[in-house]
Image (cartoon, rainbow, N blue to C red):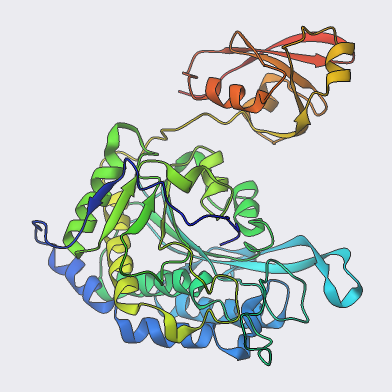
Length: 443
């Protein structure tokens, strides 16, 4: 996980739904039971001990250790019967990302890395074109001689040069691998196609998931759900944060997760949105593309981004339960009659350079309390691009509301949350004039 919050996560448990062991359970089907039983602590531990070993040198994207990890995951995907769907018929989706190499004096450059991708093809002739995604990033922050993507201060072992990343995110990766194996062992044939993605370069800035969303193997508008597993291996005395269960309309995803939690006895806090709206892990690019998305997270701990995040500290029984619950959620998402429909604030599809300065606002003859947002980039194929918004435009009015001088982004976000399928008027400043545009979201 990429973010470095100053306070522990959550105050987000306010308004959440605690569920877990001790509640009534219904029976699972026999083939599903075989899949659940195949997810074992011993196998999870075996994978973790390799992925978090010194041999892989902290799995920093762009370095040999990360390549070895990707090869290991791809081999497991093949063994689990997943079909390759990457570049040139491989299990890899290759991309480059910007980085700084500490050995070269911190000069900017680019590195190459790979997402690992494989599918279980849907068995239903009509529904197989729709996609359910399970993802987890497999990279970490490397060694003291590599480009720094978030390494934190030495906590005592000055002789150790490797940040092993067992929880972040070896834990999510081993769950991803075991769930893939569970489908093979169970013989379950999902109606929709299930795509498994092990993302790289998450620690450098979510580059793997952004790359996929900008170069999707399968159309995002046919993607029913994205589940992200990031740091699911610690704090087993607490309920696991299950964020984003409200990102599908009518509470449909939440009901699916509730059932899976009951069946597996997982102690979980179901949170409608929570951290799903933060740019801190690989669910975020999907959420911004208006794909229903959720993620499991067992919270931060003292070993986060430290050398001390090692495989012996993982709570394997809890990882097993999280993996089993995720397996059941995937099956239901893949087999339900209708795919999930996104529920959440609409995305305009722009990147913000900053607020309009006082001098710029005065030059534009805005009132003292009026402001604007300067656009640094318009995302391809977005609502903003379709509306005709351009780089360097300044949004000053949205949905009939003038943006204030102070914190205009908050006002824009509040108005985006109100958007329906009807066209929305957007006023921008461009080349010294005011331009009226119409933004339209799909039903």
